Image 1 (cartoon, rainbow, N blue to C red):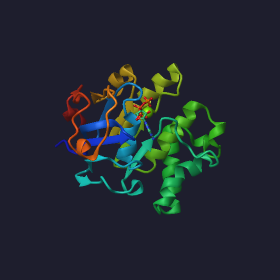
Image 2 (cartoon, rainbow, N blue to C red; image 1 turned 120 degrees about the horizontal axis):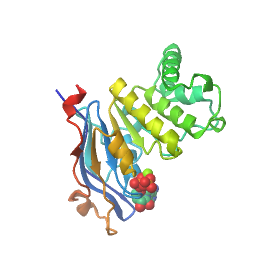
Image 3 (cartoon, rainbow, N blue to C red; image 1 turned 120 degrees about the vertical axis):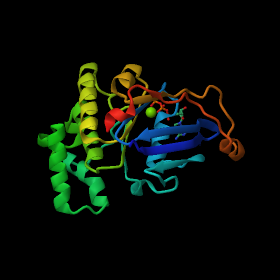
Image 4 (cartoon, rainbow, N blue to C red; image 1 turned 90 degrees about the vertical axis):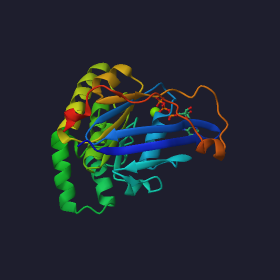
Length: 243
Ligand SMILES: Nc1ncnc2c1ncn2[C@@H]1O[C@H](COP(=O)(O)OP(=O)(O)OP(=O)(O)O)[C@@H](O)[C@H]1O
Ligand SMILES: [Mg+2]
């Protein structure tokens, strides 16, 4: 049976007085790659940061595997995010970038190094482990950022335009690799991009996000009664293909 991994209901978030997300409802199924596609500034990063627990919602609920995590702190959410600019720790080696989240969660040292070796092999970055981020190409940094998420074995991956800083050729190859990896590992991804071709190529299902057209004055009352700001999920392939 297909299970819901992530359920967002009435998700609403304002930056100052501007409501960026207005009553968003989305369900992401276990093992699928769900894409939200929308123009720059429509609130993609804002949404992922809220799901990751890096920003608080103004209204709405977030359920991960049927557990309400709306107020759970980021480090306890079992969600990994790959940031738009990778956000690697510049002073740490690749190995330490990969290990950092695991150390914080108290994973035994031996297991950390085993997981790092495995993920590094999977992504072809074994020879880069002792380098610092500034000694890597954009494509290599992107792999390390992805590795840092995979190594944590999270319940959910949040991908914030993870390919947007790569040039066209690497981008196409990496996109195919990422899709293959996601399928092979059977992991759940919520992936955002402004690139419609990328969205269509990589998605199991996708939804279109629109930019809020007028500046809205936020008040607690209006936020709780917020309405949808996007068109619903469009199934590209049947979810049953993932079982
Ligand atoms: N911390 C913040 N404070 C105030 N406004 C913000 C903040 N972060 C984002 N915004 C505004 O919220 C809106 C949505 O921003 P967000 O970064 O979520 O868009 P995005 O869809 O990720 O865009 P892009 O495709 O360019 O990455 C924008 O108008 C942005 O200026
Ligand atoms: Mg963004």
